[in-house]
Amino acid sequence: ADVVQLVETGVGVAYADSEGVVRSIAEDGSRLSLGTLEPGTPLVSQPRIGWVAWTEPGDGDLVLYDITAQAETGRVEAAVDLRIIGWDRDRLYFHRDGNDWSVSITPDGRTTDPVQVSTPDGAFGSMLQDVSAGAELRRGGATLDIYQPFVGAPNEVPGTSGQLSPDGNHVLTHSGDGRPSTYDARSGTPEASWFDDSWTPLAATFTAEGRIVWVVDSHDGSLGLYECQSSMRYIDSFDPQNEPCTSRVDLGTMPVLAGVQPGLVGTTVVESVSATTD
Image (cartoon, rainbow, N blue to C red):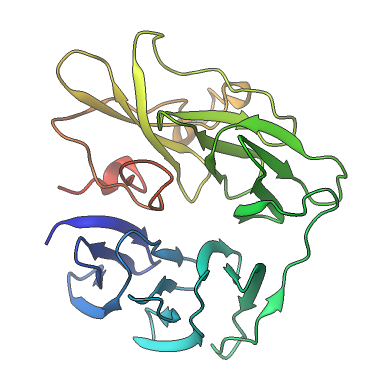
């Protein structure tokens, strides 16, 4: 079966195929079958602690799995509206029974009881889309609102789905046509594009270091893969390890890229240029 989702685990990768089978691949190439997810639902990971999570088929439970220990370590009971939101540090966020909740990981590798997530003032009825470094991305209608820690009013950006950077300072959004755009999450201002105006960005995701991997159609018969800084305003030309954009990698077809959830964009995206998969 084909790979439709891919996430980093800290000791390799985990992936889900089109039939919903979840497997891990270690750095030495060994493979392990982890379980089965409901097709079209997210597979999410926290590479820093080596945990992944998914929802089982048929209104099944939410499963938490420790890749390093090769063991299931927790479950959240099934509900009609159960929906995974994602990880922030060692805490997994999800929606269930009309509310948002989180569970955390104890030092000895256990899953805590769910704790309800409070809704910011003025955000009642909104849908929590992502959480990162304490920042929240919420959808309240035709736009997205970004709530920063210790800041009252949210910043509004266009889009119907999105992804926060690891530090919560930038956001990738997608609207009806699925094309990604970047905004400063602290101000809501759009970031300048790295690419020619005639080119079309098709997919994007943040790396663990906060850079962005882009898949771009340059309308020359091929697709280009780039890894760029999240903003042109923070270019450090004296740091060779932090070049503004990597050299183009030509692609014949749309790649499978790590960390992009179903519904965010019509494909998934690689964790870094060096991690491109066939």
